[in-house]
Amino acid sequence: MLIFFIKPSKMKFKNYNISYLYKLFFCFLIVFFLSFQMTAQQKNFSYFKLCVTNKKNEILLVKYNGIWELAGKKYVDPRSIKEFTVFMAEELGVEFKDFRLRGLFTFYYNKGKHPILFNYYSAKYKSGELKVPPGCTDIKWFSLKEALKVIPFKTMTLILEKMFKKKRYTWGASMRIFKEQNSTINKVFMEEDFYPLMK
Image (cartoon, rainbow, N blue to C red; front, side, top):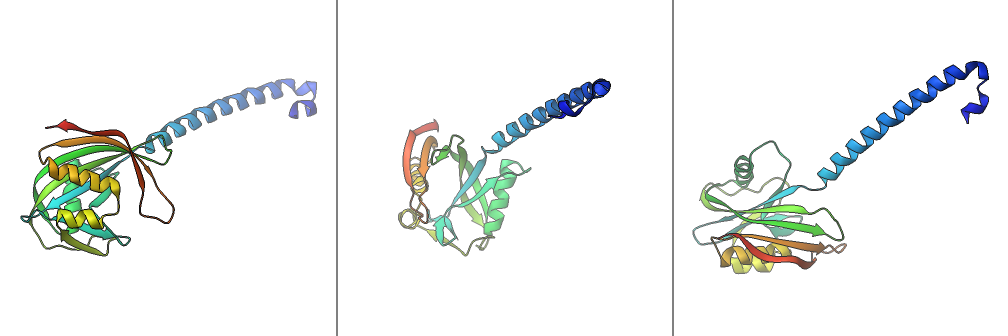
């Protein structure tokens, strides 16, 4: 619309402005594209779950938002995998040994296209006095049977069953989880059934 208000004598100035605006617009497109790419990459992230067992083969669970589950943390951190899991254990008040990767699972939530990669690790209790980690209200040892009863997440109970059935296996699977509002019970559909990544 500005073109109609510019006199012919100022045509050169007008052309300069249009050229400048084109450059600005092009720069804006580049910034937008790069920002979009960075945002798209951030939709995928890893989440760590740590399954610590004692000599009685009991599982260490924490109570978070009134729910018993395995200790877990989102992995957005400069620390290495080992350093990060040691940090997770320290928050529980324990030191561990025999640390192993037990599963890599892709979780799709609702109709989302970008999965979250869940890394499940197992470790054996070595020493330490249990303490309630930040954000939680309790911590306790459970037998497998008890744990499967108190954990409301179907994904977690399915994975634990596999982990305890084949203790030397590292598992993979892909699941789609439909979360219902105001409910801890989710509907789970196996997109790729359990398969061994390593035996």
